[in-house]
Structures are given as structure tokens and as C-alpha cells.
Length: 176
Image (cartoon, rainbow, N blue to C red; front, side, top):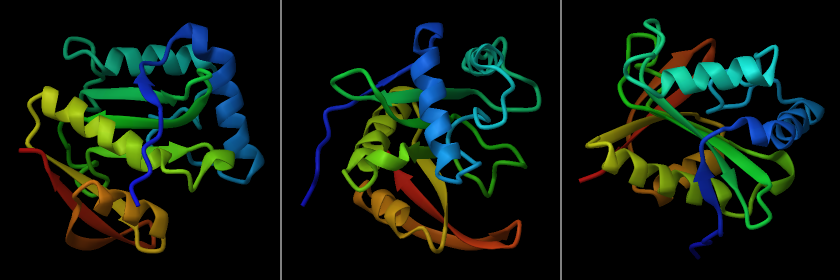
């Protein structure tokens, strides 16, 4: 059963600061210190510092030379609450080759409601509009919800690898 969620993707802004910090804190409060797809929001000292970084990295002229062109979005619901975060890396450098073109996280209290599947579906449209032909996504072998999300969006298993002692797989989604 496909579960469509009424969410939309928005670029981070200063106006979303308080909601974003609440979103981040919920991850921390549940023991999650890594927020996948957040472009290091989990490590930023301030929201403004993080916002500056993701804004710079979304523009070919200002992208950090040690990174790649990346679009980062919050997924917001009908009440404009942040339910998730997702990023799209337009290319892969040597560091990202096993991490893939896209990462995402859903607010812990909002999981198992179809949000990740819808977020990934929407980012695939962004990728198509950017002229990308395929996306590679990595996922830990024990992350069954994310594997299901990727497969629901057309992901095909490509290969396995080990990263920081964890077994993971790469899935490919063709956008043509």
C-alpha cells in the first residue's frame, strides 16, 4: 500500500531556525547523534553557521572546494512543521563514492508514516530536473525501513561495502 504524505520540500531559511533546532533536538533526545542527509546539521555550532554552509554548497560558484554541489531541503507538513531532512549531492567525489547522492532522516516521532518514501520520491524529481540520470544511495544492511523506502522508489541493489566497521549496500535508482 503506497502511503502518500502531504509534505513539500523547502530550502532551509533563517525563518525556520526555531523549528529546525527543535527537529535536531528531537534526534538528540532519542540518542541519535547523526542526522543523515543534514549536511552536518548535527555537528554545527549554530544554525546560522550551518545555514551559510548549505546555502554556499547549493551554488556552483560558492560550493566548498572540498565538497560537491548539494541541495538540502527540509520536508514540511501541512502545519509547516519539519518532519524530515534530505539532501541531494549532484556528483560524487572520492569521499562520497560509498555514501551516495542522497541522505535523509525523518523526525523520530514521525517515523513509519510514509514520510521518507515521499521525501525520496520528491528528491528524485529534483534530481531529474537537475539533469541527473541516476542516484546511488547507501544504506546499512540492518536499516530495513530505509531499504524499503529505496526499493519503493525504484532502487536496485548494486553492491555491498564496509564503512567504519558497518556493513552497507549501495542501491541505484535510474531517473530516465
